[in-house]
Amino acid sequence: MAGPIHYEVYVRRTAPAAWALLIATEDRKTALETAEEQFQAKQAVAVRVTKETLDPETMEFNSLTILNLGLPEEKSKKKPEAAARPACGSPKELYAPHARALIGRVLEDWLKRHGVTAFELLHRPDLAERLDASGVELQHAVQKVAVPESQASGQDLHGMVRHYQRLADATISQLMKAAEAASFRHWTIFRSPMWPIACRDRPTEPSSWAAWRPRPWPIVRAHGRGWTG
Image: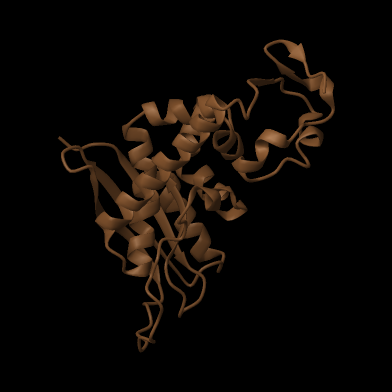
C-alpha cells in the first residue's frame, strides 16, 4: 500500500543553474499552478514538478516527474571540486535564516496545525519533543530536504537521509538537555506585541541561553512568577 504523497516544485533561474526546490506541498493543483506561474512570469527558465510517494516499508520516496517546462539542462565540463557535504552539518547551522526558512517550508503543515513558527520550534523543547513523537511526519520532512539536495549535489541519497535524521535527533537532544539543565528556566511566554522587543537581543546559539534575560520583564514569567533579577 502506498504511503503519503506530496509534490515538489523545482526551478532553474538561469540556463546553467542547477535545479532548486521552490515548494513542497501535498496539493497537486497548487504545485502545478505554482510551476506554470513561475514559468509564465519568466521568473524561471525551466520548471519541474515531481510526485513523491513514500514507501512505508523502506521509508523512501519514489519520484515521478509530472511536469517539465523550459530549457534543457546545459551539459558542462566537470571541474575539480572539494568533496560534497550536506548543506547543514550541525545543530548550530539550523538556526541560520536560510535553514529556518527551509524548515518552515518542509514542515509548513505541521507548524500551521500547532500555530507556531520554525523559530519557536528551534527554541522550544516541548515542540521538538512533539515533532519527534510524530514519527512519520519528521521522516517525511527529512526526505523533503534530502531528496532534492541529493539530486542537486550528486551525493548518496541514503547517506543524506541518515545525515539529516541524525542532525534532527541531535538538535532535539540538545534542546531537551538545555531544558533539563534549566537553561530555559521553564519560561511561559505569553503572546504579546512586545515579545519581539523582549527577544531582540536573544543569542542565536543554545549555549548562550542560560545567561540571557529577556526584556521587558512583565511579559516573561517562570511558573507564574515574574523574574526578580
